[in-house]
Image (cartoon, rainbow, N blue to C red; front, top):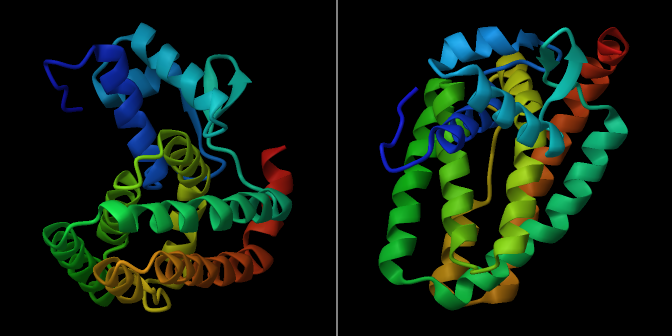
Length: 225
């Protein structure tokens, strides 16, 4: 774990563990011990416990007792609820970002999108998840809407491990997006089009996730309970 010397250890541990969960480094249903996480992260037990407490409150982890935690397996209903909220929050963030987006920022997002496409073409799931997140949250950060931003981050955190499994099972070939439409709307200063394009982008992900749950996750939900 890389620790920023200016950042308190407990915050660095939280952000590192959060990012690993978000990017699917821990699989849904995978149990972990506090001691094991401390060793993996090269951190003390106290900051790891604090990170787990925070992530549990964000529904990214569940406690099992015996100093173990688990990445929860989402039910179909939970997945639907998460995407219901994402379809409200994230298009609104894109809408608000239009007001603040500068041409040089849109150009930077276009470069990130190229790396997203490269990851899809090469089948690099880890790179896809990381760069796709960078694209979305780079845009969302321009909205200057901290409450909506925190909500979006929490929703991504909950669905990240499941998305990693879906990509691992079905590959990256079926991961089209509407990123170019979002970028064009930012350039055109068209808030309604930005929101519509972001919604369309998310809806494509919903279709893929629902199909995968029907074929895979529903078979294993009972195993984690």
